[in-house]
Length: 339
Ligand code: NAD
Image 1 (cartoon, helix red, strand yellow):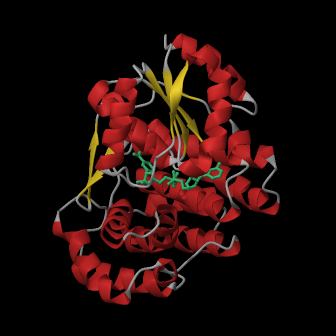
Image 2 (cartoon, protein in one colour):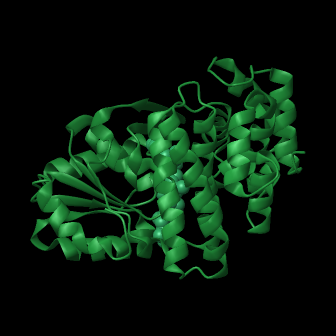
C-alpha cells in the first residue's frame, strides 16, 4: 500500500492477512507512533513490544520471540526503520509469523528477505523467504517526524542499494530500471524534504524511491560498498545510515572504471556529472557527514578495516586490492571529495 493517509487501510490489511492478534513492534523512541497503530488495530492488537534496537541483538530477539509466543500473536506489525523491521524478521525466522511492515525511514529492509542478528559482537546475516514482510504500508506522513539529519543519511543508504544493484553481477534490466528511478526520485525529493520537513509530497518522493531501492536490495547481490559498511558498523560500532553516506562516494570511485554503464546511470539519476562526486556533493549540500573521522571511526582502525573487508572473497566489479581499499578508507576517513 502506498500513499499519504494509507495507514487508514491498516485494519483492512490485517484482516486480509487473517490476523486476530497482532504484536506491534517499535523502538522505545517510537512508542507513540506504535500506540497510534495499536489504537487503530483495536481488539486485533495483542500488545506492544517497544525494545527494538540497532542490529537486532540476540537477547532482544529472544525476548520478542517469547513475548509473541506468550501473547499468542499471529502477526507482527513493525512500525519503524530497519532496526524494528529487523526485529520482526528475527521473530519470523523461527515462527514464520507474517510481518506487516510500516516503514518510517528509507532503509528499505521491508522489501528484502535479508535478516540479521548480532550475537557476541558478530552480526550474522542470511536470506530466508519467511522473513519477507507480507504487506508493507508506505505512508509518507509517518516519515515527517524523521529528523533532517537521519532523513538525509537514510535516503543515501537507500541510494546505495540501488547504486550497487546497477553494477551487481546478477543485475537485471528490470532491477536496473527500479534502481535508476529510485535514485532519481530520492535525489529530487531530498532537498525539498530538508527545505521543508513537513512537505509530504517531497517525503512521498523519497519514500517511493526508498521502496524501489529496497526492492533492488532484495533482488540482486551487493558488493564492496555494503561489505565495507557491514565491516565498519559491525567491528567499529559506527552508525548505520551515516556510514553508508560517508562510504558511498568512495566505493563508487573505486568501482568507477570497472562499471562505466552503471556510473553513467547513477550520475544521470543524481543529475550530476559523475557518480562519486554526485553522491558526495548531495551529502555535503544537505549537511550530512562526509568523513569517517566525524562519525566515530578511529584512524588506528583503518588497517584492520581494510583487512576485514578483503579477507573473505566476494564479487565486486573491480577486484579487491588490499592497498587500494586501504587508500579508499583513508580518503573516506579524511572526507575528501573523490575526483
Ligand atoms: P533505525 O531503524 O535504527 O532507526 C534509527 C532511529 O530513528 C531509531 O531511534 C528510530 O526509532 C528512529 N526513527 C525511525 N523512524 C523515525 C521517524 N519517522 N521519526 C522519528 N524517529 C524515527 O535506522 P535505519 O537506518 O532505518 O535501520 C538501520 C538498521 O536496519 C541496521 O541495523 C541495518 O543493518 C538494517 N537494515 C537491514 C536491511 C535488510 O534488508 N535486512 C536493509 C536496510 C537496513
